Length: 380
Ligand code: MG
Image (cartoon, rainbow, N blue to C red; front, top):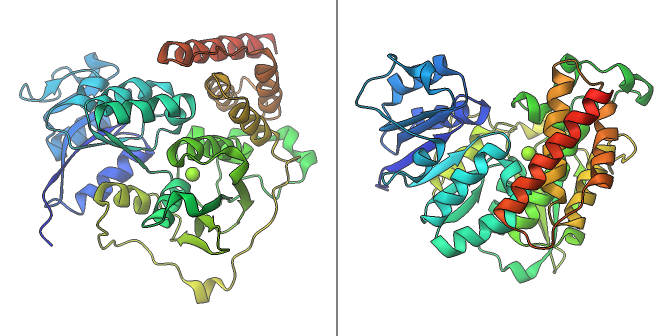
């Protein structure tokens, strides 16, 4: 099959998703071409990526850091300029946090395809992003492994025949730790994920399972399935990435090795599947796959995220912002691990949503969540 060249803009190119995206692209130079890159502040790595992939446009949150290091033929712009550039067919957004929201919304309004790994953007404003896609003719593809799995299970199916979505959870780095030892968790311990290689923020969110709550909210917006038909199931091996149950009692599941390059590649090549050098699943060597109910006492942050989702409005935006501040404070030694759920609980109690959901309302809730969390952390 002679597929046309797909022109890709990578937002957050120096982060975990960005680097793994470039890995995928590197293996298919005749299939994908990097036309735009944007990064936060890792100018060294961005400079190397520009030299290797020769994009037409580049954005860096600290533009001065690029001065004299990349050729004058490479255009500089904002992250939104990169996302909306004419030559871009598909954007993959590996940006962490709210910085990814505006560029993705603008790209959808211009009819672009957006492969979204920036779950905070979906959580904060999933309804607004879907509306932007409808208005502009753009489309949203999942990248997160769970949502990619559900997307793959839904291929060729009628949404009306879906009974429920089952999102799997590994349980994160602290799944077997006695609850009494949670008190003294260090960032190093929380960052030691048993199955996945990911960025620091999401790895801590996986240890608290706040990440899983965000994924439930993300699934609600990606697949338009109500919260009472989305369940979370603990599955230690991270081989089944999620499942769909249909009304006739059938389940479909998607299985692969826990490697983000699989869902990234599928999001780029869809509907085609491309061969990959990734390690296949060794079922015989593995022997069994295990499933357990979730211990909600161990994971209070999951409960708070689910509560924010079902309250709706700007609750998810406020809570996600407070969590970002909390995790950052934990990683820099300003907050204890067990303070994170306490802060989230107080955030939920303190927040007041608006009736009308707009980008301004969502960003205001984000700012409120950050201020609330910062004051809370300082008071500790
Ligand atoms: Mg995930």
